[in-house]
Image 1 (spheres, rainbow, N blue to C red):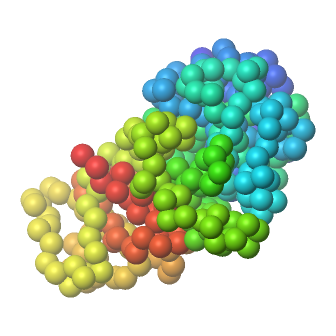
Image 2: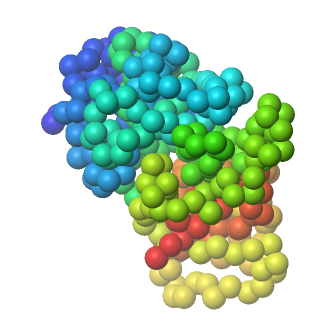
Length: 336
């Protein structure tokens, strides 16, 4: 394949034509850049797995632009799903539902469920409309690497591996969508994101009552069979080439064993500055909020890799609200 085409946001018709021809086109969403292919073209979907080096047992998320496209993918929308759709679509919420037989098995990794979301990003919505098809769109990066939040990051990982990238602005949220299974009586969060567990609990309680939000409806208590329905839960993800080291608020003033040698290069990112780390670090980033931390984490990881950083020290945050999703990404990035 030749070098990947760079398309402006005013050239979406060209991107749509490539998609209709079975091509693969990356595009911005509010979460991260997605790697798009028409959802009913198995050969095009196979190109995504090849370009990313993605395991074939890792299902993809389908992006839609209208309720009519939802009808192409599922036969029934449960009451639980209707409540969450009304509250959060378009937006960074993916719902796992029972699929129609026509949905390609390569898309769902052979499962009888399909993960679907309606993005709120206008470029993404317009590209889906012009392609006249739901689009599968996993994160536009090599599998296991930090997700791409800029079109330049897409090119770094996938140049010559995909047909085109729509060169939009950096993504706003910088963290993947929340994934919720709605095939049962209660919604079950499979992957945490910016639509938080607490928000979903409150939404369900307001519509059905407190019994609709049992303590068990979260990813920690889900079995592996359920987790298979969501990307980002079973394989290694979000890892830079540098070693990621987590530390807590209580360790801010503690001495760290760095650098190990004069050649070792370190970086730091977190909410609270620590003189010890910042003075020893080649790169540092103080984030004003958990939202800013999440939005900049992947781009910071990638900048560290570009500058050949050896270790990245990341401050842990409380596992509540968006902090739950951020800690999920940080923990996976630090896994050996």
